[in-house]
Image 1 (cartoon, rainbow, N blue to C red):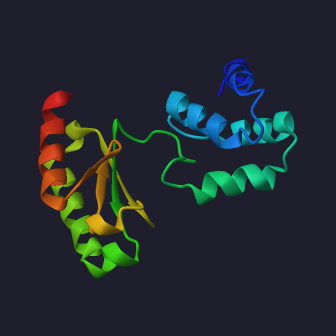
Image 2: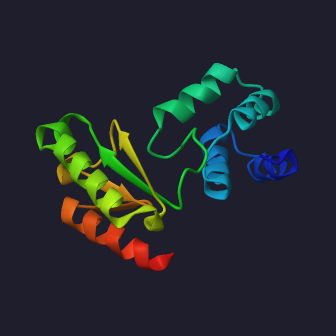
Amino acid sequence: MDMVKLDNIIARYQAEKGSLISILHDIQREEGWIADDAMSYLSSRLKLPLSEVFRVVSYFEKCFSRRGPRGKHAVKVCQGTACHLKQGGEVLSEIKETIEKEGADTGCYLEAVRCLGCCTAAPAVEIDGRLLDKEGAKKAISQLKGET
């Protein structure tokens, strides 16, 4: 990440005590992920231990990604306890088959995640930040093919 851009984000929250999460949200929104060098720089600038910055990013894995973009559309399938009990593994397999059937044209990157924080919607699937059920996700993936 460009450090000048990061300095501008930090400056927006200069007067706020405990601004780490707000800063991380802005980085995620602008970059699509939180790079290791950005975490190191934040640690130094905010005078926080690097372990604290890393802990916050890791703990809030639904909000912050530590991986760079792998596809145009992020497809996340929850594998947490509630989703697992409601066949989350089978949903993951079906979504994977749908993506493979539609081909690379969809630009989808599939990821199994520990928790999407939507246990009442189990088994939960999220595409580009939108929560969907299994059938809605399959339709959305098919529609994404026409976007490219």
